Length: 431
Image (cartoon, rainbow, N blue to C red; front, side, top):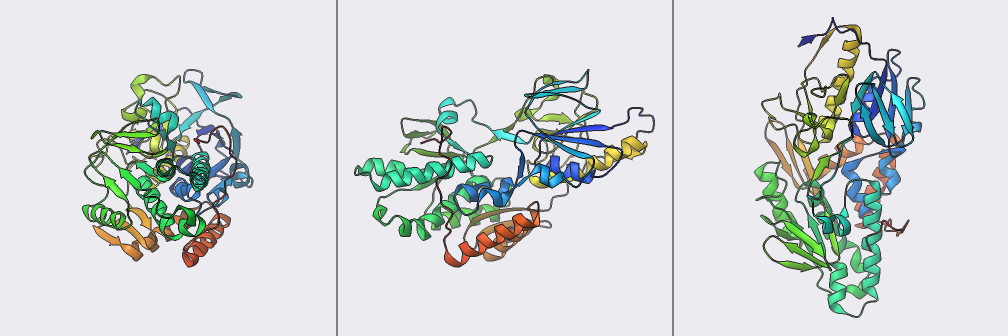
């Protein structure tokens, strides 16, 4: 513990960049606190729940089920304001930030900017693959896949039909596994009823990952259970294999194999966002900001980082930084709020120590894996029910929980969902 009684700077204006798990929880922890004037900045005017993005993309949930407007969320708190804008530059000496639509001054600046899709410098993949990181990505994926399925129904060329229907998912983490499982379920329960003319086309779902196992951070039991479940669902799994290129309707693998398809879903990695004004010495691996045990960015004053954009190496259990999970962001936000209060009042700060509450991944209907503390492992229906419950209560308000529960109930009872709409087609579509 560190005593900061000699600290003279009093935090008054707190600017939070990013309205994800970390940013929202930090703001709400300090709600109606007269010692803080909070401005939350985000390029979207809504908060959304990333773990359920893939269900929007596959038509099992509406985007409104997992989203909620910031201004309505904060309207009853006198000290929290929302600013729509995108951060362009930071001036640590003047304690100002430049947005795309103006300038803000701060006493304390917190980066909670999350991460963005990492294409590892592969330009063809960046241009042609379908990312899975935000609500817009989910809508683009839904539009693109549905439009290509519709095109396949009127295409006479069988080779072209298979290209339109074959899907390659790159990345064997939770997102890749969940997307693959959901698509496999749709292929069995929904598409034969919606598209009877596509029977027998021979389209496949591939899941490609460079590691030796799926769900690398999870237990070997979860990895094996997931592999076996996806194989039984008809997903073709290729491990120790990387996607090297994607052009001319061909996915090129590191093994030399070529898969002919128009659909590459990219869930193979993320990287933090770097901002002008933050020195290069303050960034670590994957552009994550190097932070001390109190989440203060090393080498800078009055600037903090939490969540996916933060890298703390003080914890011997996580010498390469904490996992980029929602619980890390939430726990860091809550502790930082307490430490900012302590900083203002001249009391002791507490260092961050992550409490692992477990990791889960859903595979398909009645299929999931869960690793809980004390080496407790669940699979199948029990893990699936735990996953549903945890994600339901984690949604930001009761409206979202009720609507999501309703849609899940309909989907479970009917083995189908009626939300496969082609909406907002435009220049962002990959088709």
